Image (cartoon, rainbow, N blue to C red; front, side, top):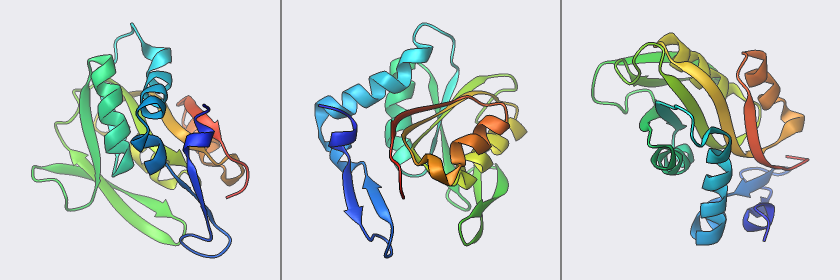
Length: 175
């Protein structure tokens, strides 16, 4: 079993020409899910990681499991208006416009070592915004981790340009 074989591809979703990479099949396969989490954790096993930040929504599932494995806290990075306490927000670029995401202002203590986790990196706008938001509240972002990378869309390069190493488990050419 490879991780790539546990990811379902849905052609022409959400619009014609897009090959949607669906990780719900990976999440539903206990062995594949465990393997993905183990591989995301592996570079940091035995090192001090204070928090894992997960981006809404699949990043919550993966990030929570990674945080558990690393004995780290978890920080949800949410769409604007979803968190109940005082927040810090940042605008980020989407394929067709701009949106905002936020975290609680006290989610990270200045200097804490944080790993960002999500299911997929494509153009990188959301991940870039999350890295900048975490840095804005004082996090030292150690790495950004993704199950899937779509390299021709350039997102991983955007994150690496911020000085944050990118870990990806599966690469799919074509989007």
